[in-house]
Image 1: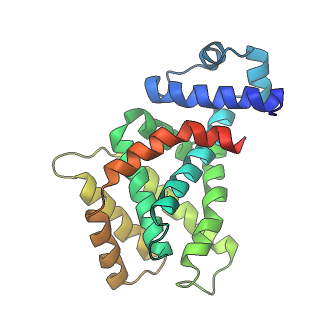
Image 2: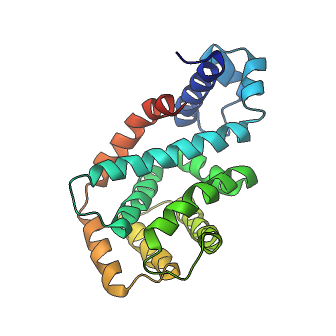
Length: 221
């Protein structure tokens, strides 16, 4: 049976993501979250001191959920870690184009000191596992530094909206080409990966991720 503390956290996080998706991060107030979650405001601020504290935890769940969706997609298929990374990042860029509210939450998360640190810490070990064959001489601290660079690229690509010239397809391809330079991925592999992404139905993965987030949060707390 879940503790009352965990129950409050679950209610708050699930309510927050719903409100962020509906109203946007900046337009959602902590008191509004407390009222909508039917949680005492004091209990909310005890669990999450500020809205940034709340989004720090929330963004970790969102990123992990994205990785889980992609991991499930590749079950029973050839386990290509670089390809899976490419699909996950393409998924994140696609989610931002599907939902302006998610775009705002991503950009805020990559911009604020504490939440961006959560992203760096969360992704570093995943990157080391994915790219260690390309960069066997690097240690975890090196992948941490590379993640800071890659996260900056991701933030900028998330910020700029697609248009009739800078299509989602072009955005994803350019992001992967740029980021893979950091991780010394070969031109041949980049071409293979971008060809795969261009034929992938990302819309289905976006819907699956957005549908799964609430349940994923509850299962992790």
